[in-house]
Image (cartoon, rainbow, N blue to C red; front, top):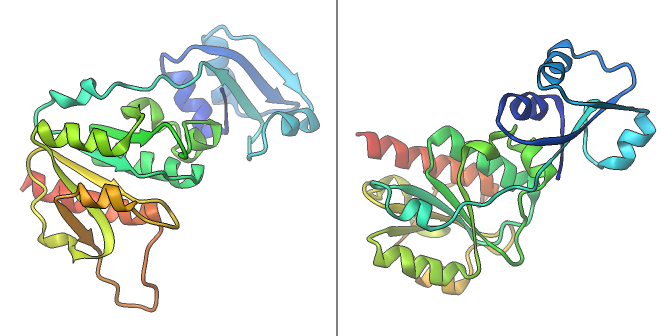
Length: 232
């Protein structure tokens, strides 16, 4: 997997991530990153801007790292934690949304993010860059079937909180205990089957002309409300 950008490079170079290749653009000047590359005893491939741009379509800022593909966690890794807080993404498709949600989850101390293996963005270079490298600090779990996974969580004592504009005020919900918060698809929201499995539906009151929020923004608002209540 290719990851890119100065913030991501710094995070990866500071981690225990195995780096296969390093590509930097001609006249790359970031001394901190160059020092870390040298400390890690990594070989550098110096490329023209044209060749760097051919490698990835995103804003690489002159540095690209080739690392091993992301290693997903297992559902069992979170089931036996004490009162875990999980986030379930119901077929999020935009890598920028996914990356932003990962970053928010890391900041909130979420114990795991669950995504489906079909019709959903996976952890790729764009996701890593948008998350500012925080993918390494959050358990991300891929499952075959979201609905069956929700059933498993409920059997283990989890309460499932869905998100939709027609739910109850998100500040009125008790988020203590084992909680999984569901974030729906950017355009369609939660699927009907997923919504049926939810114990509560949280809604963020809108006072302006906009009737919905970006998936990552909505997730962040509800997540930090949950964190506040869980600490109270």
